[in-house]
Amino acid sequence: MMEQTLAIIKPDTVTEKHTGKIIDIIEQAGFTIDRMEKGLLKKEHAEQFYSVHKDKPFFNELIEYITSGPIMVLALRKENAVTDWRKLMGATDPAKAEEGTLRKLYGKNISSNAVHGSDSVENAKNRIRFILRNSSIKYCYAHTRPGENRAFFIAIYGHTL
Figure 1: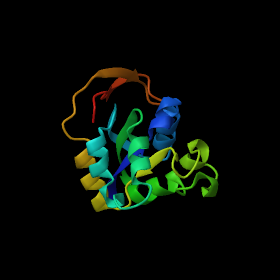
Figure 2 (figure 1 turned 90 degrees about the horizontal axis):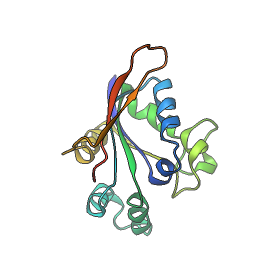
Figure 3 (figure 1 turned 90 degrees about the vertical axis):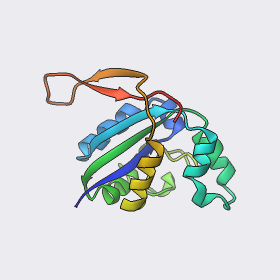
Figure 4 (figure 1 turned 30 degrees about the horizontal axis):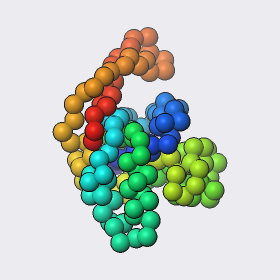
């Protein structure tokens, strides 16, 4: 079934300039990128986004981490997008992730594990609406898909999310 899911490339992974490599892996895995935004997540939005973890001991560390730098947020689409994205991400702990998964390739530890993804179709719909609302374009860049001769423009949103 055709689905949409939310993907986030986390701050240290963006800062270390792995975003392009991850986007290439996403596209090679058959995902369509419906929307992509780069920006800073405000603390109050991060607290709302991760509210399910509010009573857990790692909540404050999580909020500090996810707001520590720019993130790349993507709405991805394909058949079985949620399940396939979770497989591509790999286990939460990069040390336990399978070879070739994004967390194995770019994650450092369980807290700094490169990417985030929705765990259900319903969660994905809600998270996409929450985090990708009220956007404005800051800048664009030209991008040519492999095998195409023409360039098209992808809008990158560089505002505070």
